Length: 260
Image (tube, rainbow, N blue to C red; front, side):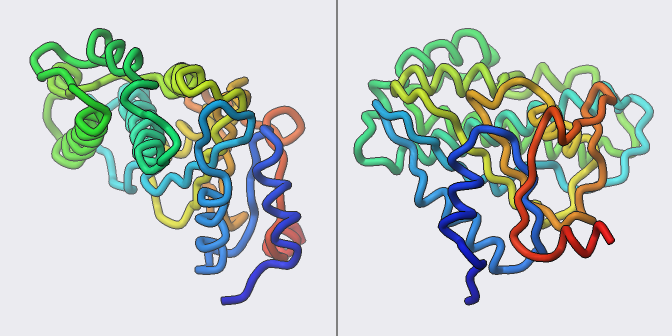
């Protein structure tokens, strides 16, 4: 497998700054391997100041046609925003379990208690440990996705939030709590390899992170062919702007060709 020129330099450009980034490159296997390597080379560390790489496989809801009038843009945005947040926290917790040097259950005891008390619906049993919490997060994602597919064309959505185990979980504040729990004063480098079709609302949910002042906790590293990211609008219909909100890194000549 070919490597990019100056890969070590590119890795530093991407991960050693907390500014949000668009990483422009052709959607090849080479890009996938390179981005996944960032997660391995920037692991989650306790009592440290180094950035933490998280490669997010499940970053959006697959593209489906929404014709149900009850699924207004505002309601759909809530669902896709929560789906993204659940994905982020679930993946971070999964990676933390894999780290031998972090006593996950002890470090995250307060976080587990808070989510059980304030974020989980009472009709579901409490998560007794981090693995059980991950299961609840993943089940919540599955239910959101199943609901959308079932109700894309018709059906009432009035009771959707009454049935999701963890219906609401704000990603940035939860990441901040996780960082404090493990005494890491850096940020999560959220690596998104955009290689599949997702609904526009999911793209806007990611743009919300890029347009927000959250990069001290979550720094989005979004890799895409320049032609493949369909909107730069947030859920508030504001444009994210390179001069204020993000920089970009070029892996190959795709951006130069796109600009011509």
